[in-house]
Amino acid sequence: MRNKIAIFTLILLALAFAASLRPALAQDNSSTNPASIGVPVRSMVELGSVFSNIYDITITVLETVRGKEAMNRLKASSPDNGKPPKGFEYILARVKFEIKGRAITDTLTFDLGNAPLQWVALSSDLIEYPQVSVTVPNPALVARIKSGDSMEGWVAFAVDRNDSKPVMVFDPDSGGATGRGMTLFFKLY
Image 1: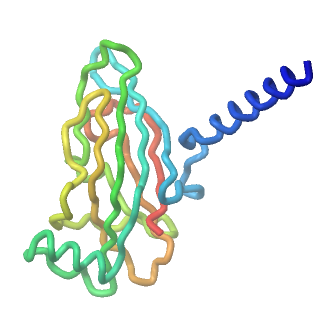
Image 2: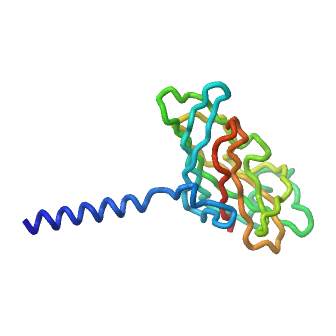
Image 3: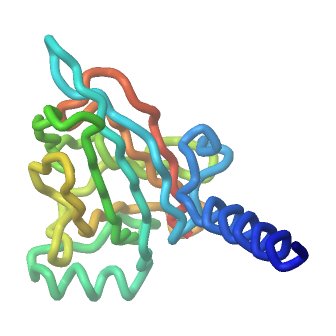
């Protein structure tokens, strides 16, 4: 009898531990509580204009590179990449994006990375930085993706050199989403 109770207790502990490994939910994500590097954030987007379909997404900032190293990688990507504006430096973020439809009929595509407002950098006091036009290292986080797809790629921003805590924002309302889904926030530091 004691063995059965011990085994049952171990199973419950294992299940509790496994549940703690799931990605963070978007409800815990905000401009004042952005996700740390390496922490997956789960949310959803709604696609379609007449009959909408809900897709689950998971976004993880895998790594960031800033300053001189970011400039070196940008120059290696394209010699045409110029220096950032005076007082600014580049930040590169490698992001993993996953999307999965909730129904077997969810076959719409999502235009990832082509909309200029989809990925935005904010200062630590939440002021939007201007967009930059540079060629990022391969692979760029740009693709038309469908349910079940997962991709990793780079995005680039220019931020104030003195800003120690810039934040990246993902706006689900661009790329084909129809107004449902939370804006998600990620640390770039």
